[in-house]
Every structure is written in structure tokens, then in C-alpha cells.
Image (cartoon, rainbow, N blue to C red; front, top):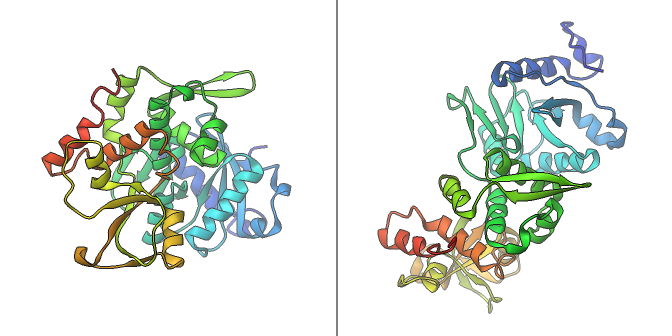
Length: 344
């Protein structure tokens, strides 16, 4: 049954947060020119009581896809990291993508959600739904609706895997998720993003979904060029306090190892976020401020460089994405050499 929205000013005291839901429905209708067809969800009994107390839930459809809108009670009362844990739990329990809805959001909260790829709507102000390829900022940046102009890290790594791994043609989302270390939900979002951008296509074979490139490799690669992002989330100068484990080369060290570039700087290694957290907590490293104090530079990646080490082309494409637009022409040319003949 479609939810009936009331003009009663006390309606929010009698059930779902109807005033905000009504604003949400009107906002999306005015911006995306479509009706969400909101209704109360029938699966609510599957959710723990604390989640029902934290959020009101309504279900809607956009472009034929079911979405759960989690309307937070209060004004941005929870930290972004805590909210994402709650929303991930809701996705696991209900098996549908979840969009956070808040009446207001600070700049820090918006930035944190966007960095994590968490869909959200602040009715009348901002809409961020990367799984549908849509991002809108009205009041904050005065930009109109647009297609996403860069890939999320998960989508980029998935694309690299499909481009370079012969064994991944006709792969299922679950196979890709397992191989790349993502949850099923995260992989579903990455594939949706790539499909909206016209880089992959999906088809059903029996009960399974299969993922393929949406054209020849060279064509897809050329179309993806403007969308690529650096895999590096942050870089740190460090001194080793104990012998480090074996690490992947990263940055200019990796580029020099696979090209004619001369690397005269600090040795650079690529690690992922969990390893960086361990290094900081177990006494392996000390963070320093200057090159002359450092033993190495650690580039912390959005995804795991160790996981794709054996798939060398995916790793090299990541290094290419890091340096393809480097202002130093020697570096950008060395990056270009990494992909020469790759699609021949």
C-alpha cells in the first residue's frame, strides 16, 4: 500500500516521520522528475528494536529499483561511522540498498559519507546516490544534477579486474566480491555504478547475474580515462622501529620498477587502511615530518594492493591512475608506458 502523506502538523507524533518523508518525496520528484512511490516497509519486523528507535523506514522505487530510506530521528545525532554500521546492518537484514535521510547535515558529516560512498539525502539541500550514478548539490555548491564524474575506488578496482583478468569474463558479483575482498552489497553498488556509466553490462543466466564489459577492452579503457582516480588515500613519512614485513612497492618506487623512470627519492610502499592502522598501533613505525628523518614513505590505498599483487596488470593500472596526470612530464610519460600494448 502506498503511504498517504498527511498535512496534519502532529502527524509525526502518530507514526513515521511523515513531514520529513513528505519533503523527501516532493524533493526527489522535483529534482529527478520521478515519483518514489513511498510506502511503509513490510520487513520491519526483521530489524532490531534499537534500529527501529533510531530510524523510521519507508520503501520506494527509483528507475525500477527498490530502495530503503532510513529517516534518522533527531538532527544528525550519530557519528557518520556509527551510522554506516547501522545502515550496513539494515542492508544485510533487508537485502536492499539503503539511503540515509536527515533533515540537516554538517559539512564534516557530508564529506565523511561521500568519502565512504554512503548514499544520503538532505531534502531540499543535497542528494548523493552513487549506486544510481546521481549526485546533486544545490545549496552547497550550486551545481545541477550530474552523472558521477569519477569512479569510486571499488568500482575502479572492479573495472581493472574485468579489463585484465581473462578468468573474470562472465563473472558473478559474488565471485568478484570474494576475489576483491568486498561485501556483496559493496560489489553490487560498484557494478551498478559501472553499468550506469556504460562500462559494464549484466545479464541473467538462470538464477545468477553475470557481469561483462560493455564493449571491446580498448573502447572501455578509453571511455574510462576521465573517470579514473588515484588509489592513494593518504601518504606518510615513517621511520621503522622494527623490521617491516614484506610490502608492495608503491608510488614512484613502483613506477620506476616497471618503467625507465629513475627513482631517486625515498622508497615508497603501498598498503591498505587496515595494515596502516596496525602499523600505527603495534610499534612498527614512527611517523616523522621530514624526508631526512624517514626510512620510507607509506601510501595508504583505498583498496588492498596486496590482494591484487598477483594480478599484476590491475596493480599497474592503479599506479597508472595515480600518475597519469602528474605535472612532471617524465612521470606522466612513465605512467603512460605502463599501458602501452596492454590492449593489443
